[in-house]
Length: 326
Image (cartoon, rainbow, N blue to C red; front, side):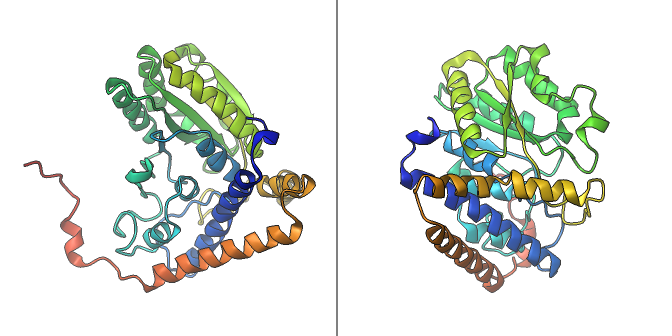
C-alpha cells in the first residue's frame, strides 16, 4: 500500500503511535535518571518508524519478538502503556509482575514474545515460533528483530540455516542503528551491507530506509506476503538511528554531536510523517500539537499508574519459576 492509499484516520493513527513511543521513552529516561527505574534501560528514540511500520504490515495472529530495546515495539503492538511503565518501575501491576523490568516485557495476548536480555537469543526463539506456526499449519509469520551488534552472533546463523532449510515463515529484521553497544558497523564488520548476511543460506535480503514509515511499511508488507506464501524466510536491514546511547549508562562519546543533530533535524521519522500530514492537509499543525498533548497526558497517566502501584510481595520470588503440569 502506497502512502496515498491510506485513509486519513490510518495515517493519524500511525503518527499517534509513533509519538506515543517517543514520549513514553522520553519519560522512561527521565524516571531512570530519578532512580525510579532500575537495572538497564535501552531507549528506542529515533527508531519509531521501524516498530510502527512493521507492525502495521502484520496480520492478526502474526508474532513479534525482539531484543532488550523492546518498549517501543510492545507499544506498537497495542499493549497498555500502563502495564509497560509499571513493569519498568518494578511494580506488581507490570506485565511481568515487576520481576522482568525493562529488558523482559511480554504480552502474549498481543503475540509479543519479548524482550530478551541476551544478545541474539531472541533469534532462535523467533525461529522456533515460526516452526510451530508451520507445524500447526497457521497462516502467520513471525517478525524477529535484532540489532547490528547481534548480527555477528553464531546462533543467528544457526537459525538462518534451519529457517531456510525448512522454509519457515519468519521475517528477520536487523535494526541497524549503526553503533551496536558503542562500536560502529564500519569498525566491527567487514561486509557492512547487513541485508546480505543471509545469502549463503539462500535467504534474500533488502535494505530499507528505517527512518521513513512508508518505506518500512511498503517493503515489510511485500516481504511478509512472500514469507506467508510458504517461500521461506527473508531478511530486512532497517537503516535507522538511535538518538540516545546504547543504554541509559552510555554517554555515546563515540559519535559527534553534529552527527546526532543532523539526524534529528533532517531524518527524524516523526517529523517526516508530520510534514507529510500537514502537506497533504490530513491534519493541521495545531491538530498535530493537540495530538501531542493527548499523548503526553496518556504517558503522564502511565507514570502515575506506575508510581501508585505496589511493589511485588516477597512471595512473588517463588512464582513463575516452574510450570506445573497436572
